[in-house]
Length: 123
Image 1 (cartoon, rainbow, N blue to C red):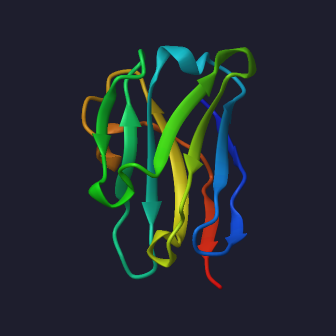
Image 2 (image 1 turned 180 degrees about the vertical axis):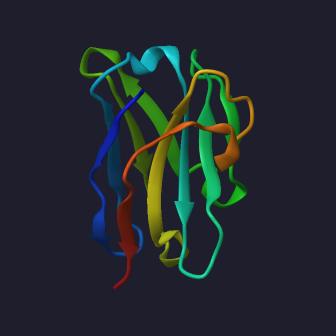
């Protein structure tokens, strides 16, 4: 069982930046494909950015291209979602997810989930 704990998030003005963290307390995240997902109010959970074990991009949502990136710190067993030039439409509950086999950036493909963290972009 991979336990993921998220941190970061909060309220930011449009054009600002945030970094979300996702830390595993058990297995080494470097061995897992990683996905970041979000659920906006009244919308389904959607894939934002997913990478495989060697950090090749599996999927990037068109709405975040050029603004969001994933990175890892294996020494800290943590993955990050760096979000720049945030827009009000980025407001959502963000989740990290991990799976050993996931090839698609869909929620169904991931077994292990963080608890979610709220990102609100508003002036």
